[in-house]
Length: 177
Image (cartoon, rainbow, N blue to C red; front, side, top):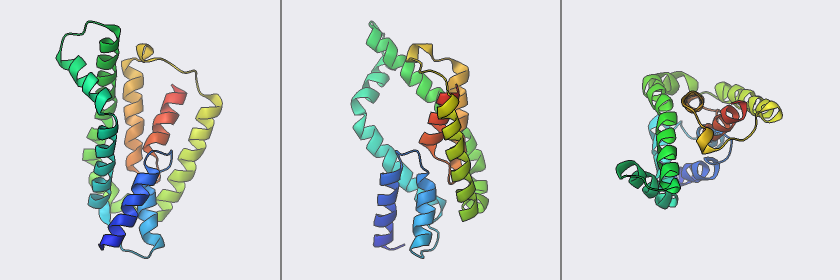
């Protein structure tokens, strides 16, 4: 890959990661639009790690408060809230991490295809629309339970399929729950 390709694809990743669209799909389609060879899953993971680093820097105060709440005695409501949020974030991430590890070859070999991207984009876009139309009410962190947290984590695992937005499936699952 050339430096220009890396810069262009990194910009695509950064601009699309936080929208309910698939940044992975945009990386694949962006490369194809320019006639570039598929950059592969390793590059995509590297751009996602860059996005993760940006998130960690941006939320450093909140993450620090969560870490402290998990490693020290909690004496106030804010500490309990930070500890609870940390636990739910970890639990909701476990299914996606496990499935991602187990399915990495499937994604790399069979799912990085324009047809897969098109169908998953359409399908999950419609599902998000339905969830928004019939979805439940908002809940607070205190109302969170184990099964919805794991369901959201399983939904995030679907984002391993290019064309499926991680934020989109998280929002969709949350709306249905």
